[in-house]
Amino acid sequence: MAYATRLRPNQLISHESAIALIGGPMPLALDENGPLDGATLPVHVSTRGAGPLVRAAGVRGHRIPEEVPWLEGDGINAVHPAFLWTQMGSWSVPDLVAFGDYLCRRHRPGPGRPTVGRQPWTTIADLRTMLASGRRIGMARLRTAVDLIREDSWSPRESLLRYRIVMAGLPEPALNHDVFTADGRFLACVDMAYPQRKVAIEYQGRLHHASYAADVERIAALRAAGWTVIEVTDALYRRPDELIARIRRALAR
Image (tube, rainbow, N blue to C red):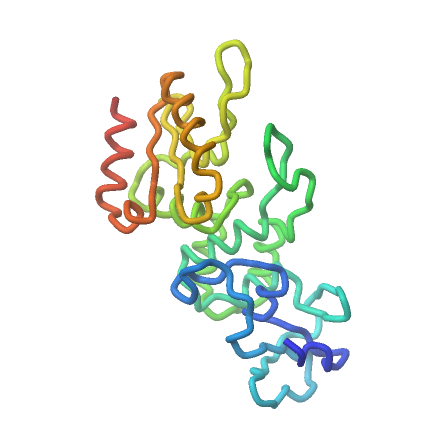
């Protein structure tokens, strides 16, 4: 993204290029291995106000209102994350939810939780404010997605899994739920849970392979404590009917 160092004062990195700068998730349809680094995509540059659009090889120019807020860092200015989210209205609703979850995640304290205390990139309230400030491409999708964004999802795949569960008509699960024994001992933090039914849903995707042994022990402890644990592999995720049926059966017990 070398062009970013040549920006004029009224030009900001935007769209997928800004997402790459903050390490945000791209749609899995673009990259099955997770977030893209932006190297294979055009550089998106938005001009604030009436200045000329950027025209250069490998650069895509856009125009945005003069009053759009921005982030400053390491000599590169980018649109504010809340506005950035509204620029992605061409994405599907589930991908918008996953990106919104990433931006709004609250890094709350708890046993074994990573990055405790780190501030979210933005808030759901800020997303709503940006939506209300003007028309956007994909406005209907953005309005649908903002109501589904949550503050405690830890990964895009967990966000997409939750979206699938809710769209199937199942109750919305609690996210990254801490489970304790009867005597108050911490047992596990599960990806999703229905605490009253003692049903846990664990996404066992490629990102979990490094901790496989620990996951096995943790899940065994949960089952010993009377929890039903549904392990969602990539293969099961690709069979949505079976996935939803398993969750329904567990909740009906």
